Amino acid sequence: MIRQRHSALTLIFAVAATVPSHAENLWQWTHQASIEGMANVYDGGPIEMGARTTDGPDDASFLFGVADRTSQPGSLGAQASVGGASRILGADEDSLTASVRLDVGYSPSFFPGGDNPGGEASGSLDSVIEFVMPDDGVQWLYRMSLDTDIADAFTGESSFTLENLTRSVIFKIPNDIAPAVEFDFEAFAGDHIRLTTHISSSGSTGPSSLRRYSSDLRLDVIIPEPGTLALLLLGSILMRPVRRDRRATGRGALTATYQR
Image (cartoon, rainbow, N blue to C red; front, side, top):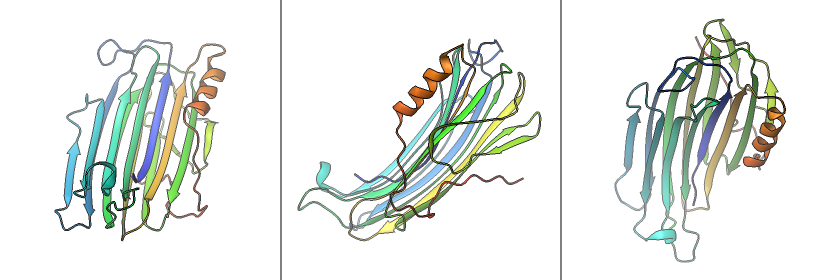
């Protein structure tokens, strides 16, 4: 199946202090996200469209999907689809994980005699996740993967900006593709942090093979116990292998931008 995954960002925070937050957890956080998508296979049927927003600042898991499929059942049919998510996970005593992604693409049947009429899809996702730092000493890491199949068929852009609103510090996620890269970001207990994401992607194709664009970014902020960081780094590398752009072109590369 073809699905174009367009970008994903994930944050994990592990801490050892206590701050009032949602329920019995350490973290004070809010979450706002919106997404819209269109999918259409060229079989003469109606275009599928949809849009969604979070149910409120306490909505931790925001998921979206829209797909248009041809009439042949199962794997014999072609599909154009848009899927996205903006989520806050694991907000317990040790960690907070924020994950943001968008997937857009077209998939023909992979079997002889199956449908392959071509199709189009487009989607746009905006997400703002804010939280309060519960402790001073943290280690910040990111990892990103980028994979494209025929990048000129489906293209997109992404921006991920991490801000310390308390200290007016801004970090634009770079385009380096790496399993785990550590960086410095000034933040202390009580600071107000904001993660802003915008992802958009679109494409169209006639009868063809799989068309996909996929980028994935993960950001981890960790306050580990002694010896824990090395294990987290190893797990980070093993859990999600990096996929590089096979065309090695600059088109559709993940970019990080900030505008006031």
